[in-house]
Length: 102
Image (cartoon, rainbow, N blue to C red; front, top):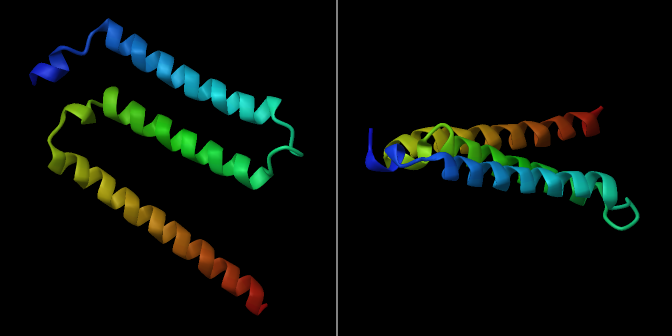
């Protein structure tokens, strides 16, 4: 166990908790307080996805202790994630093509 992992104390857990709570509060404000006439649905969806990915990375970094791991382990997780997102984007583009052809 590295020194950084051993020093992850209750105050650090509470700081992570409050950051995640703040991000979730922003998501609720976007969903419930901002009218659709002020912000388009596409922008809201993009913001939801971006904030959710931010929360996921924050959880993985602190609660799964990847922040304290070596860079090679981090790349072995992030690199396939980037490829998976690329494949999803390519498949979405391809599905649009098939709907146009029909």
